[in-house]
Length: 231
Length: 227
Picture 1 (tube, rainbow over the protein chains, first blue to last red):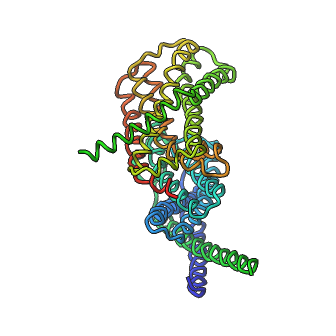
Picture 2: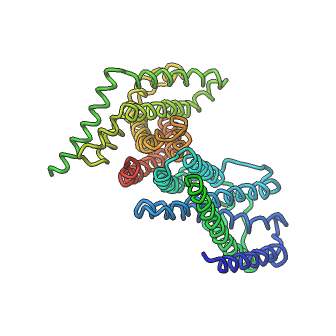
């Protein structure tokens, strides 16, 4: 991506994130039962969404790499995992912060939390796999395969654990009436929520583009180093 | 029809090779067996349980044992292939590579089942529960199959890495959580002779997992072994 476009994207991201933060703190109303801590929800869910999106991108680039053998797909897949892992951790930590006053515990083995933990473990394993392979072509192939397997296993993991009772609030979809911390959203909250999702998606694209540029430059440096050393 | 025959013959040939090698050396089975018994023993010491609690964890301990010894078997099975060069030999053969994969899966599955067959009576004695339960047998078959399917694929990758045998559990355990959860829940239910409605969701999950990952492995195995 040419430098000018990248700078524009960076500025757009900055702007949209500032607006989103403003919306979360000043526009969205205070939730009746949970109070101010509920505001964590907007960025918590957005971070979770980006985690899932990033890993989906890895699935797609993995398949594309296996079919075309173009190492650019492999690079995008790997960088997407990096970003996805960060956002998943943000998801977990912000969720814990919310949970402490609401559920009176930092952690519980409810289906969604367990699934996110396993998700993080799968992609940490992905990174470890890459780090323990030296041949770049084999590394790309194996990473693509593991990315595919990892992504497919996650819905299965979720369903396997979900058949147990959940206390995690189900904001979208059927709610277990016994689940604590349920809430309905007013239009203002809904707007903030969707805006946060969009803002985070733009943030993801921005981080990926910048990271990609960084990685490409690092590779150029490596090539130059080799050229100088062999001259 | 003869293409199917050729495929089946390849699978059978790879399976026969693994079984024969194992019968002669007994390297894998003895290691897996001793390890399983040790794990059971350690659980007995580690978990200071009263009678009721012990009955609750029996299914869990059974599957942890299966998972750990299974990892051992998978590692050894593929590492032997690579070290002796027989993997290269197999790949040179003019056969469908997925047939090689399925042959290995069947071999690993049979090894895991053999170990289970020997370990289950020990379990029955230590936990003082009857285990001759047809539903439990079916769950054992499905669970170990799922584990063997994904384990063989990942082991084929792990043996090429720097960390070798250590890499397999790291790769394997997170993605086999559905199998573990479903198998333990279903086994618990089977051991107390619960109704079919209680076991059905787990049974279906195991079946779906097995089918989905057999499909994925079939499509992806070529990419794992190509040079």
